[in-house]
Structure formats: C-alpha cells, structure tokens
Amino acid sequence: MQALQHLDLPSMLDTFVSLGAAFLLGSLIGLERQVRQRTAGLRTNTLVAVGAAAFVDLAQGLSGDDGAVRVIAYVVSGVGFLGAGAIMKEGANIFGINTAATLWGSAAVGACAGADRIGEAFIGALFVLASNTLLRPVADRINRKPMREEDAEASYTVHVICQKAVHADVHDHLIEWLEGQDYPARNVEQRPFGREDVEILAVLFASAVVPAQLDGVMARLEELPGVTHAFWSGSAES
Image (cartoon, rainbow, N blue to C red; front, side):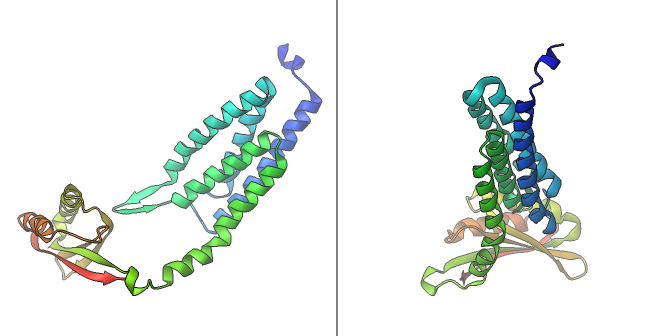
C-alpha cells in the first residue's frame, strides 16, 4: 500500500497548480498556432507544456532542485527531437522551423511551471506569443523591403528542360552534381514547358560562381536521356 502512503494533499495541490498553469499557458501558445493552422497546434503545444511540467514536478518532488535541473536538461534535448519531426523538407525548401521553435518554447514554459516558477512561466509564454504575433508583421515588412544597391548580391539560376517522364531522375542528378561542386540550391521549382517537357529551375545559394564548374555540370546534365537543354544565368538581386 505504498501508493497510499505517498498521498500528500499539499503536494498534490502544488502539482495541480503547476500543471494547471502549464495547461493554461500551453493552450494560449497553441491557440495562436491553431488559428494559423500550423502543424503543431492547440493540443500539441498544450501536451508539450503539461508533459514538461509533469516530469519536472515529479523530479523535484523526488530529488529536490537537483533532480529538477537534471530532468530539465533531458526535456530540452527530448523536445529537440520532437521539434525535428515538425520540420519538413520539400526539395530544397524547408518548412516548420518556427513550429519546432514554438514547441521548444512551450516546453520551457512547462518546465518553469513544473519547477514552481509560475511567474517565470507566464513571462516565458508572453514572449513566445509576442514572437509569433508582434514580430510577424515586422518580418514580413523586412522581407518585402528592397535591399540597398550596395548590399545586392548576384543570383544564379540553373535551367534544365527535360521530358516529364524523366524529370524526377534529372532533378536528383541536378541537386547531387550542384552540391558536388559546392553550389547547393536554396530553391527548386518545376514548371510545365510545352506539352511533353518540364523546366526545372534551381536558384543557388552562391553569390559568386566559377563559370567553368557550372558549365561542366550543364554538360553532364545535357548527356542525360530526355534532357534537351541545360544552362545557367546570373543576375543582380536585391
């Protein structure tokens, strides 16, 4: 009957307050994510916050502050793996990094609540919400603002025209050979080109290139079956 011996109403009330705060604050963070229809929404952020609070509260009850500190370290790394599952890669494009960072913030809020730092938990939740709401229009405005001419860099784009039936294989070779020359693509698009062909466009991260290297990649691409044209172009971007 050891389970009954561990029943301690004041301790249970403390746990209820900690988990209740984590539930409330995690729900507020998740609500903003749910409204914007992100991958990790209301329930996920709430569960992350409550789970972190429960683990930290349990460790603190068993081993004191030292135990809580050790568990918090595991929460930080564990939520990192959870956040990695929210990050998706489509071609050269990556989505979900902000969602993963928000989950990390929810875990921090829950850990504060579990360690009986309710005030710190509220402050943490406030800053997570501010990051996802107040900073959004600022970031959008910066992205729309043209750069000064002296800050402009060259943008290089690779164009490959091939048959639809082989575009997947051509796409893979394009990415592989560009990375082999240390020219990773930051964005890859595919567009219809006539009835039977597809145009693959790859924008490079590089702000400067060695023409002979890209010419070599283009020559290899044109040797692939189904490829009719492969060329690259450069232009100044702002």
